[in-house]
Length: 399
Ligand SMILES: *[C@@H]1O[C@H](CO)[C@@H](O)[C@H](O)[C@H]1NC(C)=O
Image (cartoon, rainbow, N blue to C red; front, side, top):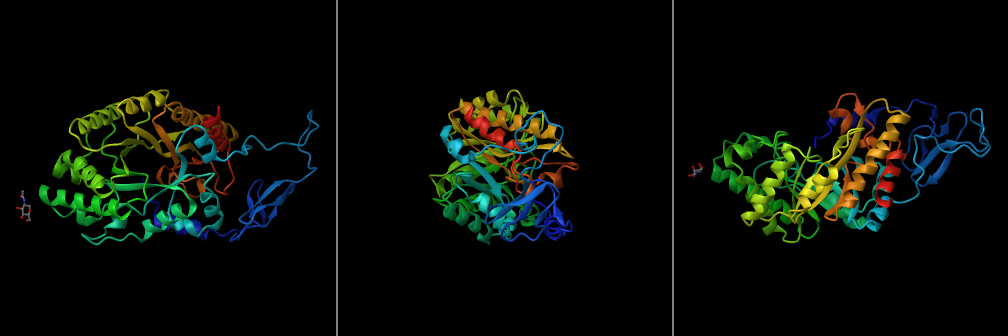
């Protein structure tokens, strides 16, 4: 989806850690950690691994009036599961549970340590560095350094890679949008861009979002430079170029608001049918899954089945479930249920191959900078502490 603004990222990096003591459950140590190393009263900074120490309740600390004589357990706002997400996804017959990531985040050692655990994440997606503005900033000049970094990380970690994306109306360099190209010129440009991009990563990508967000929410075509110049033919031009460049990669069309039966989902079904009827390669539909706490559509699973009934696979490609801030124990509990129902729907549909969260931590979520007043959408909080949503993912795969 949308790129975090550079200034937002810079601001995050510059926020000084003025608190002398870390709050309950917060990070208090680890390689690269520059914040507080002591905890508020009642909590002890406890070593977890080289990358992460956390403030947990001190032994012997009593909480409130008590009818329970046992030690206090973690509050409702934290996770207790010990299962690893990709392990449970594979045990449920899926190819992966994955995460998006982005190049600026890779200097964060604690973040990378969790991302790189392939029992936790079996797949990664570059959030920005394979997009058109990053890979062909001027016509015919390709730069793959950012994308290569993510591709190499996946390889090192033994993780699958999703390519994101070839053709999208957004994050397009102005030479594409303002070039006044005629149809034969733009057709060659799309074909060259997709062919070169997909070809560069030949053999390294499990699936490509060849087309991203082609439809408006009412199911009409988005009137971007591609549609306005080439009509719907840009879709088959891009898919054919991608197939020729890497015959083994699964080719997807990816969009949001495909999670319920809707005009947009119907438009996508009809597009897939028409591509199939014309012999154009199409292997999957990506259901982005940018959802809101308490609003997971009841038709989620049947909508997935509408796509797999066409003989293609589906994946949930950009899952996050946002709430109006501040987060509360009740919202976090509902979010846990929502993650469980989304994962459960994928588990129940054989052709749903995997789920990717749109970054695993609130620290790097795109939500707060895009939806004012909303956030806390990811399964780990901004201190890299697992939330109840984590347990919801595990429950979705295991129950
Ligand atoms: C498109 O533009 C190119 C370059 O100006 C020109 O050679 C070509 O004839 C045009 N094609 C059509 C179909 O107008």
